[in-house]
Length: 361
Image (cartoon, rainbow, N blue to C red):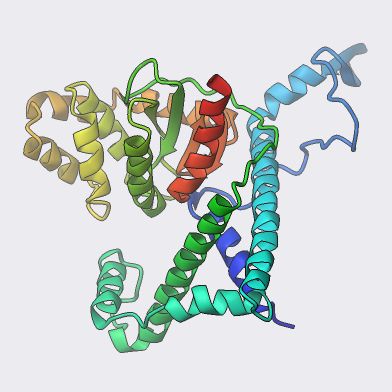
């Protein structure tokens, strides 16, 4: 049995928001992570959770030792749980608002509203749009060399149409939430994330966004526009801090991260950041050195920094800090410690930021 149109659109939108990032895993890193029963308090760190004998002497394992060992996967599970709760609450509210709006307009049901405000507004992709997607896929080696445009055109059309449908649905849902003055009172769990690294915005801004990102991740590139919109909307109130999290399956990302750190030494991080994201298909070492020259960096100093691998430890430190708070994919954001994952719309940043600013009044 297929989902009704409204439920399908809502499910697709939620799925898109969950999958709007590059992830190094799709399931928890270990199945040994304990889960507390409903209502059960977490043990104190010195609670003995196991004993065993070694050479005749009793050995003890405390809860603190256990959580220290499996800290990253536990943080990941907690982050996923919070994401699921937030997505579920958002979906529930949207469903109620759409049902109410359909009733106000005298429509038969919510599906009729979706048809009028979403499906009817999705235009057939132009030949130029289709060609652009095809060319990008070919350039990124995402298609076999002998595949023609005509062979993949139906899939490209479907992909572009579904993307447009999600965008129109997101616009509708945002408008309905603003009209209904939706206020989220869900308690937020905060992660302790060090705001160290290249930054934008006032040092004493009431809002600090720490971003973990990967220069080869296409979702990180897509997120830039939304982050820029947030920085502009809340100018003077937000500080953005960039931290590195190159994923293992992005072969050029680690060296690109090191290169950006080398550029930071010459006060050119953000210029280099923008150049790398605009050139994601060309991130080999020679490309990185070429970009440094184009941006006016001291080439000899930059090349020595990059070739010596002196920034590798900095990148590893960023990744270790990210893993401690449950980062498994990019982009990952922490807004005053509140986690937000993926290339999500600016409106999702706004919801958290507005709530944070309201608390500070």
